[in-house]
Length: 589
Ligand SMILES: Nc1ncnc2c1ncn2[C@@H]1O[C@H](COP(=O)(O)OP(=O)(O)OP(=O)(O)O)[C@@H](O)[C@H]1O
Image 1: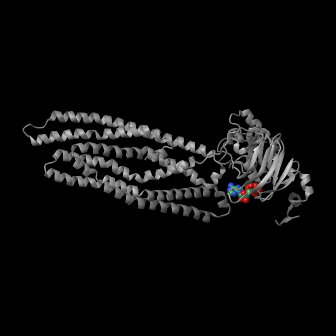
Image 2: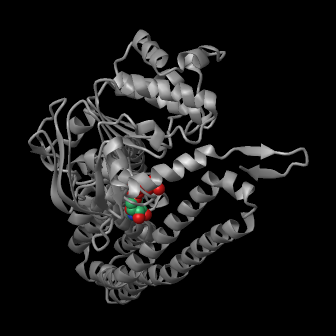
Image 3: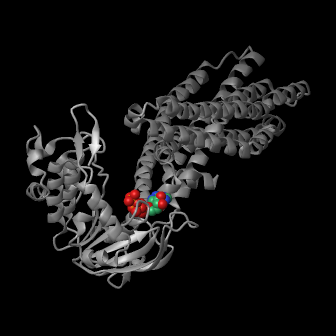
């Protein structure tokens, strides 16, 4: 129970205290009128036993009056309970969701490789939703189910212990039966959450890949994966209800069988004269009232177990260690790779014993075949992952000792696939510097050659871009991301050259924007077209994770190695021209 409360409260069980106290008070308020009912029974019984005295109508008025006033007290207790539980439930879930999202941001990107996006979405939305429901509904029911029977048991023991024992004798048996189902429930909940995550991931894949699905006409196949995921979800949902339902029902009926037991015992005690009729009626009345919350809580037992599993999933992610490091970062420092070996999976290194130095304020180009590890080098400098062997230093400090946030303040990254937030263009540029003024934003946009096209839009910088920037062209998105980087003005620039897929006009604009960005910076550039890096201070040639050549453009050409071969190939490709004849045939010359 303690661990359950600890987990569902996100490690802050004290925050549940107001709602627990409110639930206990509400339980007491609910059971208290039972004592008045005894008095009414007695008054009526006396009137029947001694007809000559008649019914004490004044006492009936008095007790009814107190019961009326008590309704107001009950209302106040309910209102306080609702206020406390809903406030706590929604506050805990809201702050927990944000805390978790913030925590995830501090984890290495390796964490995201292990989890599906649907899994993480469900974790933040659905698992917290489950906990929200448990705190707002099930927790007060659980407290009622503990408080009411306990108080009733204690009180009734004083009235007639045999009847009290008979009434409650089966409750522990029901509880034991329920405990026995715990491991089955956990396994079923786990399977259900897994199926839910898979369905969410497949749905996300289907929706985000809808363009490719249409273009390649693969709807049927992809839809099959989606259908399969939803089928699995249906099967696990039915299995969860079909197996757990009868078990919970069984426990519930077992617990309630105490009522029958009590009626039998009461019959014998009445016959022996050990029990008076009013007391017997009192037991009957309280019996039905006490088993009510117990029944309700047993009906929600499955939900509570499910939320315990949701809470465990959340706690597991919260316990993932964020990237460590506290050291600050100085601008314009040398970057050193010293015998660096790294693999996304431990057994498969993609960079092998890599050593090189990048001097401040120089341009280093990374060249090599696809999959040789160029992007990985840039990701390691930004510490998206930590290396397994060797060390990367900026100045004399290993990046693993640096505070990841401070490190990233010193780095501008321009990816090939630009992601824009669903916000205005101005705010997308402001990502580079939170407190930037409109003038600074426009200045950065001018340098990045995008001010003109932004100004030509009807709402200018206030134009909303679609999700991921879907309403802008590739070149426009590139320039906006360069404007962001210009505004950030970090001393290290990691650049994935992206001009290859642009039309000549956009390419020239993006190239001009890049030239503005890299001035006086330490630049690490992933180069796909070698003609753009002839003036780089050094070129590192990677092949299957090894550094195979290093030097300037001229030095590497003279070595007649891989770089010279790649250069030759690209020169030949540049010489080709596409001539489309009148008949539409395409000819390479
Ligand atoms: N997130 C990841 N998880 C697992 N493996 C990865 C991941 N990213 C890249 N890899 C693998 O690491 C290797 C190096 O990839 P990397 O992206 O660094 O190469 P690259 O030289 O930049 O390739 P390209 O020029 O095609 O972009 C490849 O074999 C790739 O499949």
